[in-house]
Length: 638
Image (cartoon, rainbow, N blue to C red; front, side, top):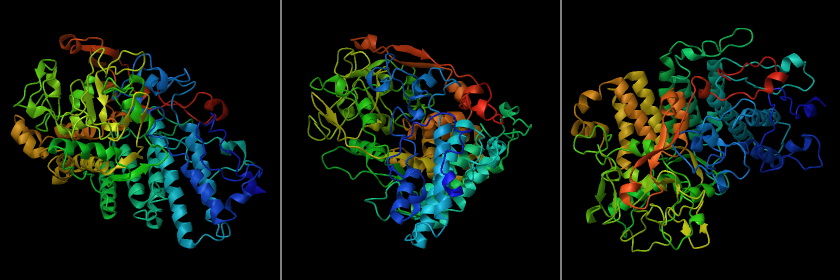
């Protein structure tokens, strides 16, 4: 009977709120009140395995992933109609506007992740017992145990990233245990990290390097995925938010135990560097590499380059995927990113409601691969100066179209990621021309197809998110259909950037490993290497690359550009402890209510963000949890 009792939600004192996570597979038939049937055979146990997977985040869902709307990288119309506000309640975008609260935290995962961990613990306890699922062979049993252990580690990582130090539940507490045993305190952050990393370490050997059954098992945990999660975990631990941050000096348990060490520890960067390199090595062993599209004979070299950059996100299960989430096929995301490119398509079918603020537009490099403010050969002082596209520029901006100076002479990722007034937008479906000659281009001034003025269905800044839209999206007068793709939760470029960042912090800016991996990404993006670009186009560029702080900012910028609109910036600003600067500024864009170019290309402030430090760096634990677990302590400021 003890075993049966353990299936109940024994962590109720931790799990105060009701989870919104839905299971996609039943564990046992509805008429069986205990877990006894769940592990009677391989088939039944596999159902429970899938239940452990069912808690993975739906990060390809614009409403579920806080990385999309809770920061400063994407903005939506003030009326937030339709897709974004169907329930009329608070949503991730309210976090961006300073409306997070402790009574009912927006987008918190405290409850759902502890429920996920509880399910993982049940699975591990039962599958370790070789008398259960008797027809499960030893190798497969070992693999399943390793998969679920890594899932458990990932759910702990999500908690650590969001809340900082948390309670660790290694085994489920029995329902008959004394109340005092259920009053679980938060564990010091470094102890949480070491525990979570240990879960991964003990699982690696039993995981496959590659998925052999690609029809049924893509998205399942592999060695590259496990090591990439560990790299992300240790990068978080080494970053300024948790490494040398005096803001958390008073974050202590009820017994006075400090929960975050405030002294800087350089060895954390060493660990992060080693973990990222291990993830790179096993990923490359598995055949994972930066994605490049097969060139098309009907496209110009410029557009072929764009298809490689766009395809790195939207080409299903492509070579760059370290971890694709098959629970998050990005369909609705594409619809709200896609702009209306022609008057024959109705705006409500091509919403274009996701927009990039001007600060993100400015983040991208010039065509020379350096920041606009440092390029000694190009002048961007007057960013809204009007200029007309020439024939030679026609694959980036429609020939003869008048648009702003800031849209010219930019790097390939700028044109691959962003749609803008006058910018070409090659789509395979419904293409009006031959190849990329006379293809679609955005017309985004008021009353034009890309800016109909319909309430809630418009782009707030004038910059559309082309990067997230698969090129086969089909428009019509009544609907649009999308070719879904798995969400790229982790791709190889992310790990390259993590490694470069950790090497700079651990070894300094002269280590050639930094530039080796940055340049792999830049080469795929059609740019020269860092050193060649800086020495050629930046005054004193060679000397600047000898400064650790300068290279730190360079790597962060490379990360911001390469991973733009993938949800990474939201978390990066927090771990770097720069959110108090970046999220206390203006969200701005063009004056989209204007018809004429001279009026449209005036910068306007849309919203002034407020970020309160240190409070907003961590999520609040729901206030009600403290009434049932008196050993919990709240995060600073909440």
